Image: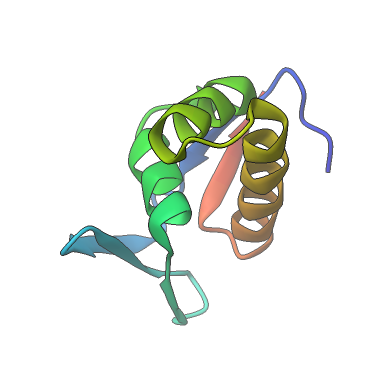
Length: 91
């Protein structure tokens, strides 16, 4: 998907816990997803509606990667979680 002007936010229909710096998310289909460090950071940031650019910047700073790569990773991750109804796209 291409949600350039949109923001991502955690879906109210998910349950999540962060244990020892790792997020565990239960999606509406009752599947458990364990997020890696990047995914966990994105999950934390999307408590509030957050634009992809802001996510990319935060990931680039936190994990010392190029913003373009962080943006691609964040886009891929967010699209996957939107597909699983864990994240919502806020226009």
